[in-house]
Amino acid sequence: MPELLIRSGANDHEVVRDLLAPGAGSVLLPRARPLIDRLVLDAHVAAARPELAESARDAGVPVLVDPLTIYLQGELREADRWSRLPFGEARKLDAAELANPFYVQKLVAEVVEFEVGQGATAIVPPYPYVTSPDDPHLDIAIAMLRATSRHMARNGIALPLVPVLCAQLQRMGPEKSWREGLDRFAAVALDLGPEALAVCLSPAGSPRTDSYNKVLRLFAATRRLKQSGVRVFAWRQGFYGPGLVAAGIDGYETGIGTKEQANLASAIGSRKPGKKGGGSGPGIYLEPFGRSVTSRVGETLLGHRSMRPKVMCDDERCCPNGAASTIDQRRHHAVRTRSRQLATIENQPHTRWRLHQVEKESRAAVDLAVQANAVLKEAKVPEQIGTRGYEALAGVMDFFLASMEEARAA
Ligand SMILES: [Zn+2]
Image (cartoon, rainbow, N blue to C red; front, side, top):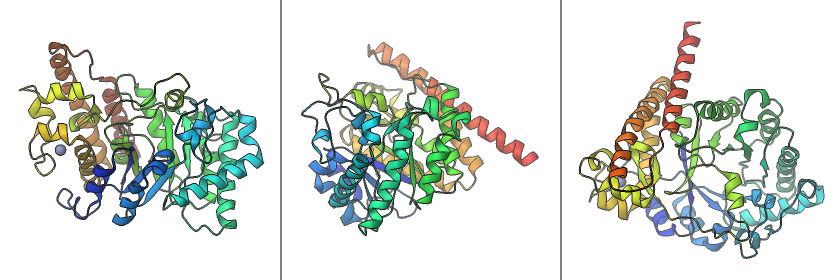
């Protein structure tokens, strides 16, 4: 069963509690399952809001605490909340420091202890951001995996492991780099008997700029990891997540109306001294676009007579007052809708149907975006909805469908 992993923000507690309440999913989903399959918490959010993990524990929903040790690779503001964690640092650590075995051991001990203390139900080992197969951070990633497993065995910590591979899509994604990159990481990770593998390939998830080749690379590389037979989650893939699930991946992780795309270089850069940080609040999730748009775009489209019926939530149990509910209860709506979408994909018995469904929806999104952009322009809203990513996604679905046909014919 594919999983929806939701990364909760610091201010999402009431929303998460509502969504995890007993029966919250049963009215919407064909068979009883929680709306959130796993709760993911940034380490500093888990520390600041222990009630989030408590709500999940009360509901019997697994919790992952993301240590976000990629931030060690950038300089952060002194006041940055992540830098104040037991294993946090405001200064930038170079590869030689990160590779030091004594440092790795200390980091692993602090991260594991922290996650256990925050109520994590599985351990995410510390992980760096790897740019290419010959980046020394790949060896560091592997060393961190092994050290985590050793530390847990030595200290009798019997929780499952969910390693995260966090890598640059452009140089780690192409087929010619798999053997020296993804495969090397996966071989070590598999030796540890993980519960699942999370893969974060970045940057990806921009409907405005993503090309066909880029989306194909993302899907092919993610499926490569899946070939090992382990459960694979697409990390930070709110935009391509449903497509990846249709293509055989076991689940995806996303924020609530925010953090729907992977862009790690920018995530690290945004915490630099001198940057304001904070980011914008949650956008409004529009199902036909499979992503959230800014408040201004959402309100304009939901307020437009001929656009409204095309983009509004058509489930009265989710948004009983139509567009007003979608706008006011945007975070509830985002999670419920994503959960329902995943159940729809799951209910289609054949991979072919699943791929075809995503292909059809992506093509429809292109047409709808063109109409929406005319409405936005007329309303003098400077933003536009990108179409390139949808075209790319539809093309990739076509490619997989054609390869399946070929395989059948052969
Ligand atoms: Zn809704």
